[in-house]
Amino acid sequence: MPETLTQDEIDALLRSFSSDSPPEDEEASPGSGDGGGGGSESAGGPAGRPDRKLKWKLYDFQNPKIFSKEQMQTVQRIYDTFAKHLSSYMSGMLRVECTITINAVEEQRYFEYSNALPESIMMGVLDVKPLEGNMLMEIKKDTCYLILERLLGGMGDSPIVQPDFTEIELKLLEKFYRQIIRFVKDSWANVTDMEPELDRLETNARLTQIMSLDETVIIVLLSVKIRDHEGSMSICVPCINLDNIFENAANYAMLNRKRKHIDTEKTRDSILERVRTSQLDVRGILGSTTLTLQEVSHLQVGDVIPIEKPVDSPVLLRVGTIDWFDGEIGVKRNKMAVKIKNVLRKTQS
Image (cartoon, rainbow, N blue to C red; front, side, top):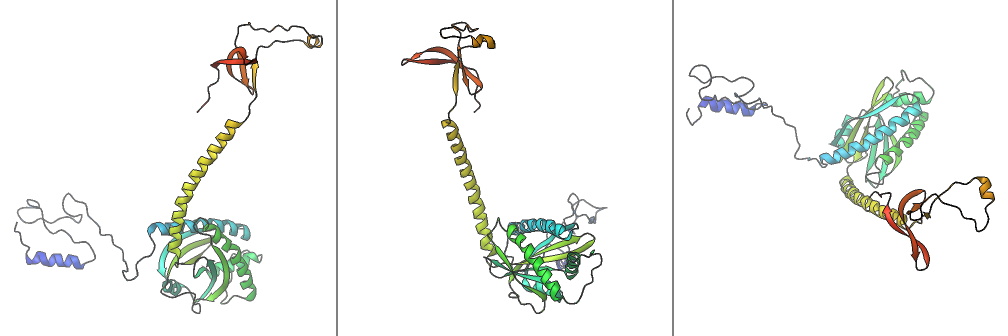
């Protein structure tokens, strides 16, 4: 086989680079194929090698991603907790089964999120200190009207969607938002001490200017299923200072694990010290016998009670209600004493 490529091979190579699919290996192995000519290869690639499919993803180098995969997973865990709390709350409030799940967690520019919204919306603007900027919580209008119909005593089977919300409907939805934003605080509790408050409600996406259009935000898309109704809601989280919060949260979690380990050791040592210094009732049992009540009533000073035990038998030492040792009786420093000879109960380390 020659070392240089022919013009046909060069043209085929250029065509393969310009196409979307990976280049196919046009070169046949020596001795392969039918007869003496260069044999053709199957679509699966050269003989002995599996077909390799090109996997690629668009990436905008002018607007690189700010957050890592681990940080995005942290946001998803946060709103998994939020979705569980909200599902339970709405099921009790609407007296019907509600299921809320996360569809996607994405990092975008705010103008991408804003352009995707319909003109007429129901959006809560939340002031979330210590984060700078506002968090947005948008619920689809058909879902809002179903919630309103259930709150007002209706069945919620076919809610009528109006172009605009009335003042009464806005007041009811404002109360609903104020109830559910407390779940935002609970879901972020392991990351930062957030104090969300409802600033206002917005109903027109085109007249709403919440933040700069080029600002980076995290979009959480959730599906809302209320019995047979399938709706959606979205949450827009500002990214200002969010990176620092994640970093501080990671450091806090590490320090908290160390602190818990130290606290556990201190608690264990404290408990053991209290156990060691606690007082126990220890008794030396010389022997025992059985008397009738009549015999006990006739006992006088100087009477002798025979014990069913030899004189040279060991003395039993009882700790609390458990027999622990035996030994022999004696005198030490003019006081009665028992010298331990055997351990009857082994302690567990």
